[in-house]
Length: 227
Ligand code: ADE
Image (cartoon, rainbow, N blue to C red):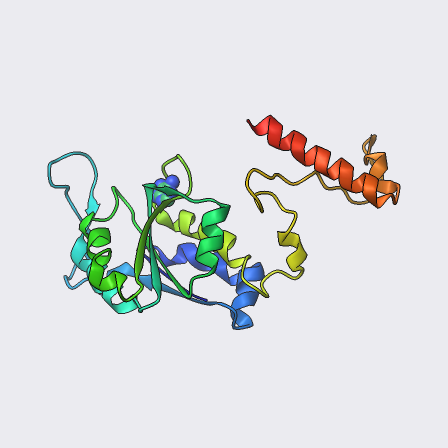
């Protein structure tokens, strides 16, 4: 998979060198490139924003600079993800869908977001027929300073689903959200008693059927407590 992110703060993406995502790049499973939006400006001040039509607070990111950046970064297989608190809510299902993509582009808006014509332009039929798809996505009902952290959240959730990224792919089977409404049972390791709190006895019993039942009951209890 190829992942590109376009941002005015490329340094935000430094953590992608670490841990599983860093290793996935070394192993060639994943190719990540970060673009500085200001490299696509043509004025001396490298301006990326301007005042909103219709008035109101804040600044809006200019469409020309985003268009120049995206024209260069888009390929015929791109899913263009525009991060915005007004987008569709990201969840595990969406992570699975994006994990099947060949090329993800994360467009990180700042301020009051990106001029709405950018998403509209690349949603047109001519791009659709090239298999370019535009998605406006929010990671949750709160407002961040920009799309960079939201992109990192999505990149981590998506890339750990790629074949070969996790050491043990069985980890994906019984984890929370692996299927609708499922939350994982609690996990324990040694020592058997820590600060007077014992590990549930059934887990030390070696009785696999009883352990499976206990885990299913605990998972159901967690799911119920969420409602
Ligand atoms: N930009 C600002 N807030 C955001 C959010 N909740 N999700 C995605 N992008 C954002």
